[in-house]
Image 1 (tube, rainbow, N blue to C red):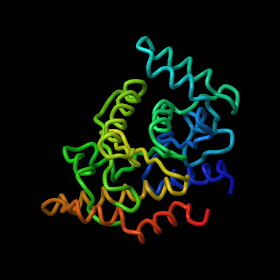
Image 2: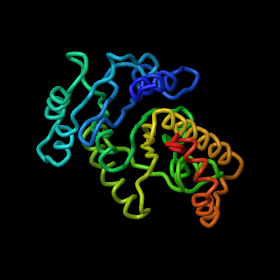
Image 3: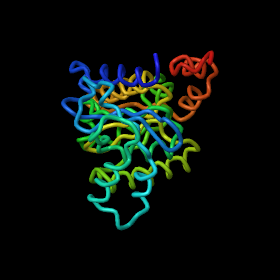
Image 4: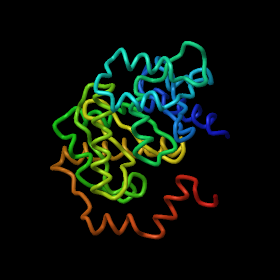
Length: 254
């Protein structure tokens, strides 16, 4: 399966109603094409029905330039989105979250990014318990698939303000942790996962849902018990877990 075919197939699975990850035109998915371009879902279409005509090849340079332009406003964003499409159906524009995808490709080594609004995750992100999602790991496979720590970003107006805030937060996280996050939670909004393949992006999103569901249940019976730092580090560094992670992301045998 080609990368774009995999992107479309994964999008349709992520959009299945029974998964409760996104409805209508919610969510978006993208694939790194080069250091300066990405394939991304067009604005206004559904993850569940994504087709070839709904994926655009976008030049990230005009989008990137907005981040450091203090005069940029909504009109500038609209103009950049209208001019940045390299390949795709005429008249289509990239997802409104293209700015954020661009930031995450610039600040992480992701090959694919999937953004969804899972009900289970948003129950916590829209509550006073959102910090519980990033306070630690509650079981080993969370660490294997998502890493020891994930990033929680406060609610910021979507668009340029959010993209700038995420860029700052990811840079701080990377400085502190020595590596960028693989998961970014946005309060009152949803989750972004950064992965090596579309299939792994979906699997990581499913793990985020499981983590949220476990933590929500634990909060109902007294609160979650997180793994201690020594245990978390051990799981992160175990050779057998490294092997399992490579198998999960498809890198073993490449």
